[in-house]
Image (tube, rainbow over all chains, first blue to last red; front, side):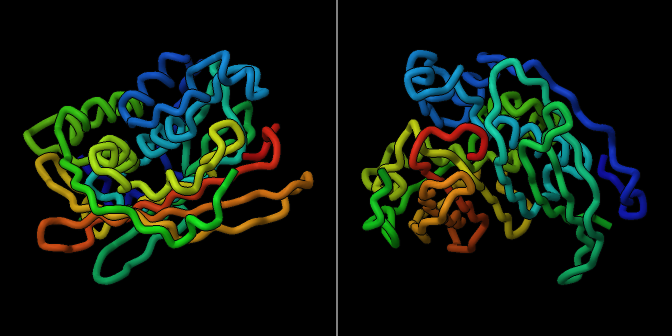
Length: 138
Length: 151
């Protein structure tokens, strides 16, 4: 069931999704699903040899979960754009909060659209930002 | 070490079939249980699903020009990723005709000193009619030494 246009309002967004602690299994499951098998995300000796304390969380995993928060609300068929920017490295054991706010509601090319500012936070620090655009069906 | 000569390289075209089981697997891995991903014969793809182009590029030699960038696996990072859909995202059963190109390679000075080298690759996804269905834009960055905080 899709959300209605007049229900979308800054300050009335759904609650944050909190997930964690992120595990190595979460990373491996995502890497297998995506096909990105970069060793830095699962091979402990390789990661420590590169100077990291542990395998680095694959950034597309929290980016995917943040997009899940948005599509759970506005509907998977309605997304038209998502732009992801990583700001900090994440590690197994991190607990993350996924949420977003309405940045803009507008009409364009005969469609009603909404732009969202999405954030993934660790201990109230923004570690990942997403800007997304959805259409809202009449 | 990034090879700047790879700028403007164009990959061989490749085909990507959007598969229902792969959509289920990817939705689970990104912690979604939305019914649009799981019900019916032709579920829609999650917003970042087209990253699975990896599997299809592997079947066609020289389809992924990112390999020519030669970014270090240890000092290379994913800086930004964008997906644009020109209509509803594709659904299971769709065959996409895809092509990647290196859009840009450039340098910037990092905040803590040291040169950051960025590379940008764009992939176009078209349907059987040749209509542009989606675009992916990958921005990678390589640091001069292993990064501590900033990627």
